[in-house]
Image 1: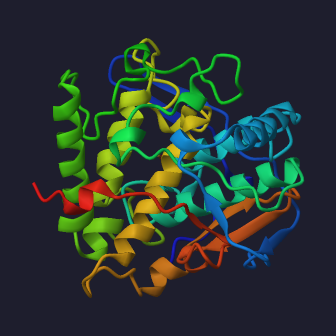
Image 2 (image 1 turned 120 degrees about the horizontal axis):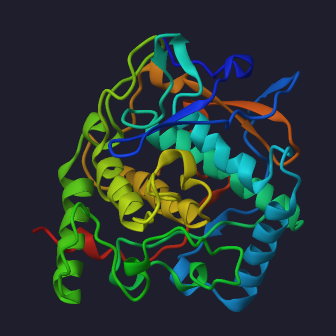
Length: 342
Ligand code: C2O
């Protein structure tokens, strides 16, 4: 059966664990709501294009900063507030819910739920930001880490006076340092070698991993034990970039280095926009195997999110398959790894 959306009344404290520091409990359950609305695709007059973060203009940056400022200014108990939105990730990823069986936690990583869950999460986040600045066409930027010019943390996120800034990041990984797309230990490659390595990671994860299971992740159904297996992109660069950004001085590698806190770094959303963009690109590559699953246990799995009007909405994986029905797409930029067969 499909994974069903969690019962918010049964939400419990989340668990954060580290080998060295042990376990900590975190309260990150969302506010409750008497009513749940089923998701309906939005009406819109034109597609919103999410821009590459390294090349946005000052006018766009003003709007985006304003929107983030307003989100951060919402009262803590507003489900659209910055902290509540970050907590969405904590609750779905650190065991605050169960998967229809109290002995198995609900986990949206390491399985076929990874791409659709995050797509919907970003969708509602973007709608909230747009609503706060009265611009329904507002689109979030993506961190273009798959192209050389986009590989450092985008400059707009590193100004300490900006609401896009987060101080809990690795101090040694500030721009112009290039992200390491399969980061595990510090390597200190030359710029050239890092680019070469990153492009071949991208080629391998995007082009070599052809089937839905290899790319999107392994099946995960109601009542089952979590984390059957991540898809290629989720593993690297997705998780490796989280670790690369997370602050080594922090106990649980906050913010980006732990699920419970990752959404507290505005960079998280730009990172995930690029992950989401990869799903679109993967489906557009030639070959019959690059298709989404057709299994209804996947298509009918559902999640709950608060929308821009603070209504609780139930959305299904099938609602997330095509970004055009959600009203957005990505600015077309050069894709250097496509021609980079290692
Ligand atoms: Cu839900 Cu990038 O993690």
